[in-house]
Amino acid sequence: MGIHSSWHRSVRHLAGWAIGLGLMMGNAAHAQIGLSPLVIEAEAARGRSQGTLTVSNTSEDSVRVRMYAEPFTYEQDTGFATLASDPSDLSPYLQFSPRELEIAPGEVRRVRMISLFPPSLAEREYRAAIFAEPLTLTTDDSAGGLVFRTRIGATVYVRQGELAPGLTALSAQMELEPRQIQLLVENSGTASARPEIDWQLTQGDKTIAQGQTAATSVITQQTRLVSLPLDAETTVTPGQYQLTGTLTWLDGDSNQQQSFTVPMTIQ
Image (cartoon, rainbow, N blue to C red; front, side, top):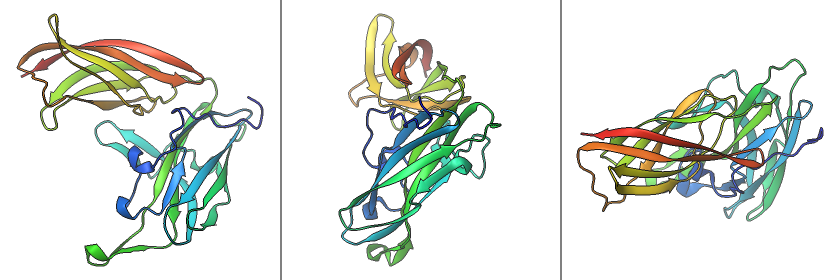
């Protein structure tokens, strides 16, 4: 990339709503704004990357929006969470233009986003959740006049240096409520990844269930439980099973794959 490198959109143009990513804070029914893309991955060239976010106003009133960033992670069990601080925080190196903007009803605005790293910054992945938040509070009359503020966010990952994910499926366990398999995935690499999972549950020579999951973020040097839902008609009884499949993720412009086979006991 050149010095004005663009941001790579790693998730096949996720131009939807942040509620699908778990970054909707507040009442989804009163969301005023949309944000895209929802996931951005980039490599810094000479300490710099830049790109554009699209913010839209879906309400019937003008809204003033503030852009800001916070450190975040994905917890193994509970998923997305913001952090008070993090060595991998991208927030101090991000600039927005404009940082605040007025959006008319039905209007779409673009916000320029730049990351600038000092030469002395350590080589690693830096990440942040970028939020678009209306500056006006919303009152929910149906909830007894409850006042709240809704914000939506996108996640941004910027690599400083030659980094790569390293994914491994460690173990699997059965959950009855809801009926699903929980696959524990470890990322021992130096960059985060969003693997899709093709999987098959077998017992002996018999296939019990199979499916494919949507992309799920696994932060570098962390583990994540990924849910593999079972259909209501799938019957599982106590015994020994085998879960096999393939983790597939986008690294730069190429797909990477890692096969797995893990035993599973249902009691």
